[in-house]
Amino acid sequence: MAKSISDKIDELKTGVEWFYSDDFKLEDASGKYKTMTELAKEIEKDLAELKNEIKVIEEDFSK
Amino acid sequence: MENAQQVYSVSDFQAVCNQIMETAFTGVIVEGEVASYKINQGKYVFFDLKDAQSSVGCFMMVYGLRFPIEDGMRVRVRAVPKLTNWGKFSLTVQAIAPVGEGSIKKSLEMLKKKLTAEGLFDPAKKRPLPDKIAKIGVISSTQAAGYADFCKILNERWGGLTVLTAHTQVQGMVAADQIIRALNYFNERGEVDVIAVIRGGGSADDLAVFNDEALVRAIAASKIPVITGIGHEVDESLCDLAADVVASTPSNAAQMLTKDKRAIAENVRADIKRINNLLNTKIDEITEANRQEIVRVYQEIVRKIDSVKNEIAGQKKILDQLNPERVLERGYALIRGDIKLGNDISITMSKQEIEAKITNIRER
Image (cartoon, rainbow over all chains, first blue to last red; front, side, top):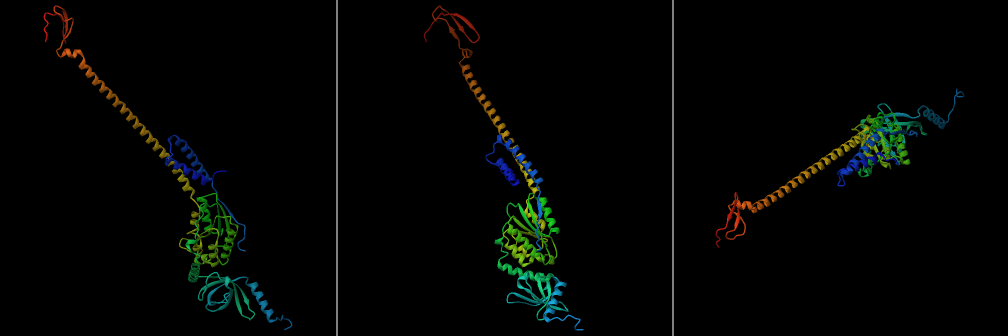
């Protein structure tokens, strides 16, 4: 199942927090940074493509 | 003469009159001032509607009262004219609403007091907007500028939402019932996460529908959280007080219902920039720490070399002091040979080598 934008934003947030955590390792940082950059691009693309679906209900509320 | 004309019984005449009036006035709207207002048996409402010259009696059922009414109030009624069995002309009122700033305000105050006492506006009953909104039920007129503003801001700020719009009138005497039906529609289906009641700005008369008692009660009773975006910032209706969340305008309602995708995109870019800077800082810190460690190790090596050098110098000094040449330089001589009278010996001094013969030996 494709990840939602919210899921991706949460993943990015967790990824960013890793850089500030005690788990940070320089040898892993470059790979993580690349992953985060790709994720950020994906989020921006998803945001740009998001469209709302607006439907007017056919029900007649005057009756 | 009598033979040529229709002769009616009284009842028939009254029935024909009513038929003609019903055909002529399918729903006449009359505006005037209320007088002699009373409710009989808790069910039947009677009052006169008058102006400077005329007065007409009115009748309605108490459940049709959507606004508190009292004598002196200016109202507009939608009614069917009727000739009663007693020959009295009256209006059977289908709907009534106060008109004019003074009457609307007075009616509003009375209703607000009543509904407040019932706890309809209790802040403790308010529900927050859901964290994740996927479907929004909108109740508005699709022709209204407020609805267009709402959709525009919604589309600018966020996407991926399903918006189901119930098109209703948003002003006039029939609007309240239409909006109530739309609220019931969404509540019965339960498919939307939130209901937004939207209407742009207007006069007090235009917005009076949002002080309709039945509508206010329907909003307060909604199982689905309701947000109102009605009128301008200065307008506050009883529907606003009954809603879970109040937006100042339709645009503001759209803002409150959505995240801002441009702000999110900016935050995402800022996050990446931040970790990029952090990574560079960490690399700089580690590089600096390594540089300092190299300097420290180098200095330690130099110190150890100096220490060894000093030790060697000390040893050399001791060796120097033990060197026989140094002893000779202090004036001593080295004698080689068998020390017996008449023997030849060699004497080594600092600057000379001497060959000598022993001519005398004396004990010390």
